[in-house]
Amino acid sequence: MTAPLVFEEVPLAKAPRASVAALPGADLTLAGRFSLTVRPHETVAVTGDELSGVDFLGGLALGLEEPAGGRVLTLGEQVTLLSRSAQLAFRRRVGYLPAGEGLLQNLTLRDNIRLPLRFGSDFRQKDIEGRVDVIVAQLRLTRVADLRPAEANAEDRRRAALGRALAFDPELVIAEDPFEGMTERTSAELLEAARGGETAEGGRRTVLVTGPGLPGLLRTRVDRAVRVVRGVVEEGR
Amino acid sequence: MIGFLAAIGRWTARGLASIGALARFAFDALASVGTLPGAGRRVAVRVLLNQLRFTALEAVGLIVLLSGVLSYLTISSTVAQLDQVGASELIGQLMVVVIVRELGPLLTALAIVGRSGTAITAELATNTVMGEVRALKGMGIDPYHYLVLPRLIGCVVSVAVLMIVFDVVAVAGGYLAAATIGGMSAARYMGIVVSNLTTQDVVLTVLKGFLFGAVVGVIPAYEGLSVRRGPTEIPQAVIRGTVGSITAIFIFAALIVGATRA
Image 1 (spheres, rainbow over the protein chains, first blue to last red):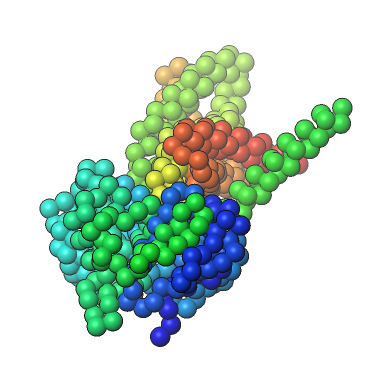
Image 2: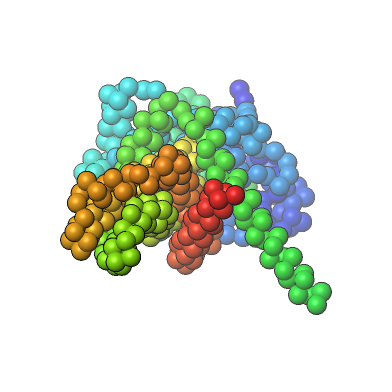
């Protein structure tokens, strides 16, 4: 089975090239280049401070940024080699929760979740509404779904942003700093929603989480936790 | 001396690079029509209708006021003098050449730059700073489709329609002035105006509507999406968008006058 996400020898932009090294036993290797394979159904957290370059991983995986070297394979594709319209169509196969949520401020939380489905699918209106209702209920947004982001609290905004990322029920979810400012309980809830339930192989979806740290409660809930500190990459447990 | 020439060279190169980037942006925006997905078309049309409401419908009052006052002032201050020298027929030329063909398009476009161009730059710059543009790309929505194209088409249609409103109100306002001050009859006034109106005037006016509308749609959007550093850059982007649009409108107006007189 193809690994949903592969970083091969990619220099992380903010990390000084020579200082990136791997610890023994990790599949993160060598000589200033970042390599990581996220296997199907796996939940991997890659954490590091702002100089580590981990905040570039989401953009690299989605082809929003061009890697300075190496290659990035997302669902088996090098996204940056696709045409502009093919890139856009491809990204609908991946759930993306950007840092800071990126919710459209002039839309309600429900409309934010609805937008990718209305823009990028040929589903009937009734089916879209059904799917949005399920996501809203699943992420416990029913009470606040008709508020705009500025009227909602940080937790509800984060839930809505995750709901938007899950709109197409993607097989791969990439979440940038999804737990920032959240309680451990909410973080665990968000992670479970991103995983989409359990299968015999692991989570129903493959999940990559990036950010400065991982709440304590979640350390036991991810399959691998990888830390990048001051350009030095290490694999956790 | 060499330093001075080098500075001129750098300034010129920067200017040309900016114009090139702007042209590329405008081309990409137009080309994106061809890649708009079927489902996205319905969403984009809804954004377009919103844009038409903000840019055209809600600006009608302002345009009627500007046009009415301008035409009344222009005609009232000239009709008495023209009558004294027996040249009241020139009122038609004045109305058609000065107001309908030149000032109408120019003032309409400037009013829309001030009203909607600034709003477009501020909104898109905020979208960029808040990470909304990146999020759109990340979920497979082209910002050209969702943000730029509806605003561009909305501005082109709005400026063209508002220009017609401006000209109609200007002609009516001119009559009001000619009738109350110069005692001119409606039939004579309309006869003079219509006899001075050529097909070329109508074509040029419509052409300017589309061209100026495109300027108001493209430059503010380009400046809004060019913001990189953060919220403090938003006012600067609004200034660049407004000044750039006004400058482009005046340059195009001068070029059109030059081309039609050549």
